[in-house]
Length: 263
Image (cartoon, rainbow, N blue to C red; front, side):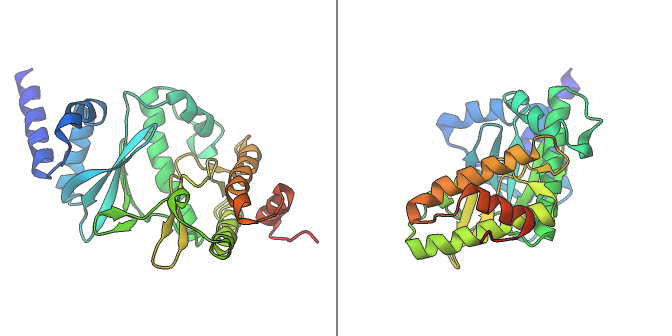
């Protein structure tokens, strides 16, 4: 038992050396929910491989994961840590089951979360190869995904929901998102499954959208792929309706699936 405690202490010390900056009032809660012994070991492994040089502060906290800023081999990166103890396992199953890439995954919580992490890396790779702007995937290790940090000087780019838009700019962004959804379907053979203004970032330098949170994206063979696609369309049209965009769900559905504009 003493050897295990000593080993965990050394791992924890290594994480501290990576300058894990956390607010004192939140440090205990964050550490218990995110930095359990297994996750500390995984961070230690990524540090030894040189993938993570130093850890920074929290970027975001979601239902299943926390994202932290980190110094990578050459530039800043984002480290997404899926929480094994508190993740919503049942909601993950809906997207994993039916995906032919993960047919042999055991229905244990830990195995689902590890598969989910690998799934997000693969989805990001497929989306990027299809010409869609997404965070560049770097690697995964157990419940940790390392990817490109979307921002500058340690500050994340804003989400679509937080950007001030006029009708013309909104129309341009909408057209790009619509084209991304078509490329995701046609070339990457994926449906995002949870697309909305909450997981699209905007590059303030050129006002182009960046699709994030690809963990739940499913292949076209998934039995609910069409349901998820129609839900994505509904979410996007709901947001852009305020900017005088009158595209109907069926028009957008036809464009995404066939790249055709209904007359």
